[in-house]
Image (cartoon, rainbow, N blue to C red; front, side, top):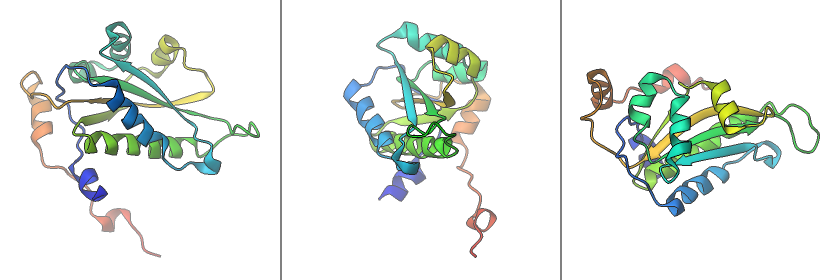
Length: 181
């Protein structure tokens, strides 16, 4: 069941520094593109750096905060998510593009988990640097970087990251986030 996949997903910080098959990455990205979107705009855009091209992979890592670099450098792929900010048909602002990108990213992460891999979305990176280094158009809003790959050992992580990785998953109860009308 999908709830089991979602429930078992964690933002891991321990990746095995190994490549994964391109077909597997394409399957994960296909799941992302199957997300619903306002007016079927499909505003999401994905920029993928893999271990097959370490120059680009390391370029993406270089834009991250130091704490994210510690673990993300071992991921199999780094996926930069972005969304077109304008509606294709009219050129008007697409106020739903980030919502749609979020749904696509959730699908991406659920498929990653269902594929036996792990993921970790992050916002700790320099948005201007990643835009410039990857030539991401100004028409796109950068969302996050999602690290995906095979689960690795906690051994190389700082103690505080090991503790976080081993801690119980903490979620707010429904009564704090849901109001039945």
